[in-house]
Amino acid sequence: MSSADEIMKEVPGLIRVFKDGRIQKFRLPILVPAGVDPSSGVNSKDVVFSPENNIFARLYIPKTTTPNHKLPLVIFFHGGGFIIESAASSNYHNFLSLVVAESNVVVVSVDYRLAPEFPLPVAYEDSWEAIKWVAQHVNGNGPDPWLNEYADLQNIFLAGDSAGGNISHHMAIRIGSDILEGLRFRGAILLHPYFWGKERVGNESDSIEAEVIGILDDLWSLVHPGGSGSDDPLINPGMDPKIAGMGCSKILVCVGGNDFLRERNWYYKQVLEKSGWKGELEVVEDEGEGHVFFLINPSSLNACTLRTRICTFINHN
Image 1 (cartoon, rainbow, N blue to C red):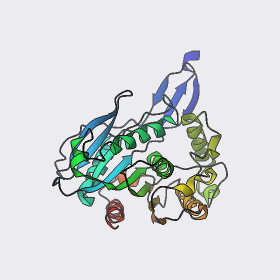
Image 2 (cartoon, helix red, strand yellow):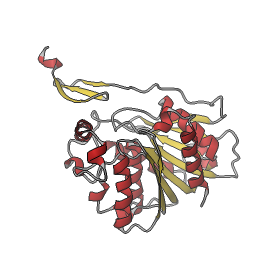
Image 3 (cartoon, rainbow, N blue to C red):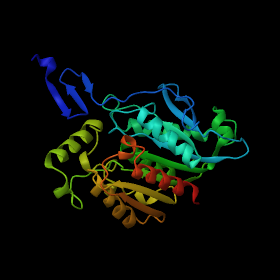
Image 4 (cartoon, rainbow, N blue to C red):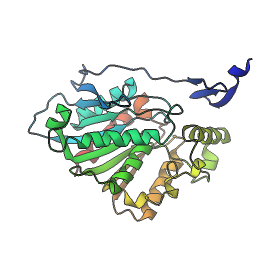
C-alpha cells in the first residue's frame, strides 16, 4: 500500500479519509428529481436560496392549494451524520411527500453543505441562511411565489431527523435570540435527534457496545474538528447554557426503542425540563424500532403512526 492509500480516519460504513486528503463516502443517497408525486399529487421544486454557495431547498405543496388559504410551514433539515444525504434524496423526498399530503402543509426541505469538506458549523450557518431566506417572504413579495401564496409565516415548525434533529434544536435556540420580524415559530419536531456526550447517560453503557461509542466519538470529531469534543454544546445539549432560550413554545421528540441514540434522546427530555424552558415537551417512543426507521420502511404501521403524530402536533394549536 502506498502512503497515499493510508487511512487517516474511518467511520465504518459511512466515510474513510485518506492521508493524502482524499475522502470516500459510503451509503450515498439515491437522488430523485422534484416534480409531481404520482401517488399523492404533492408538487415539489428546487429553489436556490444561497446563490453565492449554490445551496438549494426543495419546496413542497399539497395537491390542492388556494392562495387565500395559508397552510402551516415546516422547515425541514435532513439527517446523515452531517456527512451524507441531501434534500434531493429519495428517502427524504418520499417521506416529505407523505407528510405534506397527510398533514396539509408546505415544506421547505433544506440542503446544506456537508462535512468533512465543510466542517461544522457550516451546516448550521447554511440552515440559518435558509430560514432568513424564508423571512424574505413576510410581506408576500419574496423571491418564491409558492411561499408568498401558500405559506402561513405565523405558523412555522422546525423539523429534522438525526443530524437534522440536532440542527432543528439549534435553530430553535437561535430564533429565540436572533429575532426575525414577521415569522412566528410554533414548534420543533426532533425525529431521533443526534446528540452525544462524553459521559454515558441512562443505560447507554449497557445498551451500546464500546465499539459503537468509539464510532460516535470519531464521527463527531470528524465533522467538527474545531470543537471541544463530545461535550461541545453543539452535540451535548446539557452543556449549552442557551437551551432555556428556545424560541418556540412546544417540542415533539420521537424516539426509537432500538435506536442507539435512545438513551440520549430521553436524556434530552431531562436537560430541557431542568433548563427553565417554559414550553410544552412531548417525548414519544416507538418500541422495537431502530434509527430513522420511518425513512427505511415508510409503509410500516409505526411509520404511519409517527406521521400521524406529526400531523396532530402541527395542526393542534
